[in-house]
Each structure stands twice: as C-alpha cells, then as structure tokens.
Amino acid sequence: MTTGPQGFDLGRLLAERGAERYELHTRHLNHQLPRMLRTIGFDRVYERAEGAYFWDEDGNDYLDMLAGFGVMGLGRHHPVVRKALHDVLDASLADLTRFDCQPLPGLLAERLLAHSPHLDRVFFGNSGTEAVETALKFARYATGRPRILYCAHAFHGLTTGSLSVNGEDGFRDGFAPLLPDTAIPLGDLDALERELRRGDVAGFVVEPIQGKGVHEAPPGFLRAAQELLRRHKALLIADEVQTGLGRTGDFYAYQHEEGVEPDLVCVAKALSGGYVPVGATLGKDWIFRRVYSSMDRVLVHSASFGSNAQAMAAGLAVLAVMEDEGTVAHARATGDLLRTRLAALVDRYELLHEVRGRGLMIGIEFGRPDSIKLRGRWTMLQAARKGLFAQMVVVPLLQKHRILTQVSGDHLEVIKLIPPLTIGEREVDRFVTAFTAVMDDAHGGGGGLMWDFGKTLVKQAVANR
Image (tube, rainbow, N blue to C red):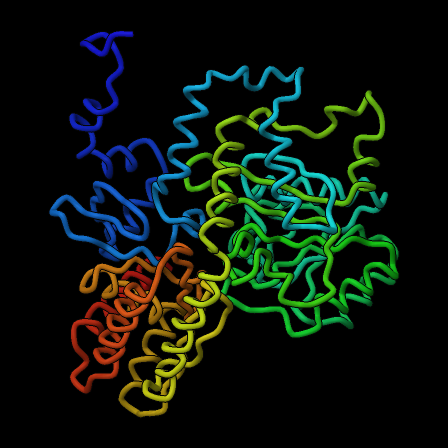
C-alpha cells in the first residue's frame, strides 16, 4: 500500500491537522466540551503520554490523577500491552467470523474467572454500560421478574437500560420513559427488604464503592443484602466497572467484605489496557444456561465486536502484567500512603472536610468553614452553584502544578482521585505538595488568585441559569 499523495499517512494527517483539534470538536462533535474546557482553563494541547504522565507541546510534564476515569489502570502505553496488540495485529487472525470459536476469548475468560472462583462464565461486550445492560437482561430472564433495584446516587452507565438504574437525576432528565426500576439508599437494608417483599425483583445492582462522591457501602451491608436477595430468590449484581481489577486494593471491591459472592459481576475500563474498548459480564453457570437455553437462543444476546481479538489480547496482557508486577498489592499500599497523608491535613484546613476511599480510589470532600471570612466566600459559591469550590481546587492543580484531577460529580464538593495503579511515592509526594499549596492559597487572608477565579465561576454559573 502506498503512503504517497493518494495513500493514508496518519503521521502526516496529524502534523497537518492536529492543531485544529478544538475547532474540529466545536464544529463536528459535542460543541459544549471545548467550551467547558476553555472556561476552566483545561484547553491544553497534550502531545504524548506514558505511564502516569502527559507532556504538552512545550515539553512540560503533567501528572495524571484521573487515568481516563479509571480506564488507564496500568497507565498509558504499558509496553507489555502495547506489544500484545502489535503481536495480535501481526498474527492476521481469522477474527469475528461469527461462526467459529477463536482461542483468545476462552483464554481471557479462563484467566478472569481465576480471580472470581465462585463464577463460571463470561460474556464479552464493548464497554461498562454494555456489561451492565447484559447483567440486567440476564437477571430478568433468569428470574422471570421485571424489576431491578439500585442505589440513590449510583452510576451504572448512560445507555437506556443502564440509565434506568442510574441514581443521578441530571443524567436521567429528558430521557423518559425508562425501565420501571427502583432506587433505595445505599446501606438501607430495610428499604431493600421492603422492595423484595413485593415479589417482582430480579436483582439488586450496586457499586461496592460509588464513583459519584466515593461513598462506600457500610460494613456488612453487601453480605446482609446478599442474604436477603437469596431469601427472596433475586440476584446480587456487583458493578465493578470502575472499582474492579485492583482499583480499591483487592481484585474486586466486593472482596473487602468476607462471604460476598455476587451472582453477576460487571467489569470494563482497566481491562482494556487503555487501548481497545472491552466490557465483561461474569456470572454463574445456571444463569447463562437459562439465557442460552437452546440452540435457537444461541444469539439471543450478542455483540458485533464482542470478543474481538484485539480486545482479548489487551485483556490477557493486562491480567498478566497485574499478576507479574503485583499491581493489586501495590495499589493497596500506595493508596494507603496517599490517603493517610491527605487525611493528616483535615485538621489543618477548615475547608477540608473528609478524606475517604480504598486503595487508589480516594474522595476528598470540602465543607463549610467556621471562620467568618471564609464562610462568606463559601456561601457566595454555594449560592451560585454547589460544587464550585471543588472546581476551584481542580483548576490550580492543573494550571499551577500540572496535575490533572476532576470533581467527582455534578453539584458535589468532592474531588475523586483515580490515578494509574502504577503510581508510587514520587507521585504521592508531588500531589500532596501541590494540594497543600492550593489549600494554603484557599485559606489565605487576602483571597488570592484562587478566589478571583471563583468569582469567574460564579458569574458563569449565574449566566447559565
């Protein structure tokens, strides 16, 4: 194939058109994204990335404490995953014939199930929301019941089925009618049992640690919920799309609680290695046998790109790296270090309310201060829009300290840290030093640049009403 004037040359295309990135998005994609990025000063131009770092066009490095919302569990461009993808492309496999059984899906399922000994089978899709959709369908069919329970403030995806079990109204507004599912408060066993008594519940889908706000299920809740569900012949569905694959210091977050064995588990994000979209729904044998009950039903649930060779190779490489490099234990130790150092600052800064989480999934929550001067500024922000103070912290972390973070959800005064699981003490030091400097600025008597930016956010919030 030629790469001359009539051929395709990716390098040349990026060299010629790469500078148009923000204009192209404005014209052809979600036009609000570049607008938002410019408003908060996030309209950077990143040229390359490796591990836990980006580099901009001037060669400045940026520490990534967001990991693409958890997708980059091993950081960017891990050499083992990268090589696996080169290898699978070079192999020229007969992929996605639809009428054969390739080895890679079976090998990845086998390796994934080795970390999930009470589960038996896997369905591979293309994303986290698709993994949840699969679990919802399987639970309904296997139990013969229509209703799914979920938690207030939960996030399970944005396709219509997953949106029906999404606990945030801001995502649901304008997309009704949704499926007739029911929310309960996280940790409320009485509410769970009350709904189960109605006899129409297929299952209960829950994040062991909610991504929005980083709220953990209370101790003993998952085990008690599992007992109630079994008594009422309903299924426990663990959404581990963000928390799974070592994020919280165990392979799955539900494993923090002894005796919890979900009937269905959803994973995605980190399984991709940051390269090829992939989702997986793991389940018990009897559930799969009911869904795929005959040859007539062999394709009753499928995905056009599910189990493709590139995604399977990436997943196999990710699990191999995690096992070889002790990624889960490393995430637990590094997360404990980061959380401990941040928690030590709570008594020092009155605007810092709480530090919580597990492993490398950490929530930093801000709250109403006691001093009169700070309280007045806080009240001004809250009157305009809840969540502006957290955004005020995120912006100087990027602009002054070159650290990428983001708020944990709309109208929340919480920053969520979900960095690559490969970060170490050097990155912990850099973040804590920068965060301390931002907190010093926020508590300074003269207001400073941070509060000046807060006034800009207030004006923008009022204008958007």
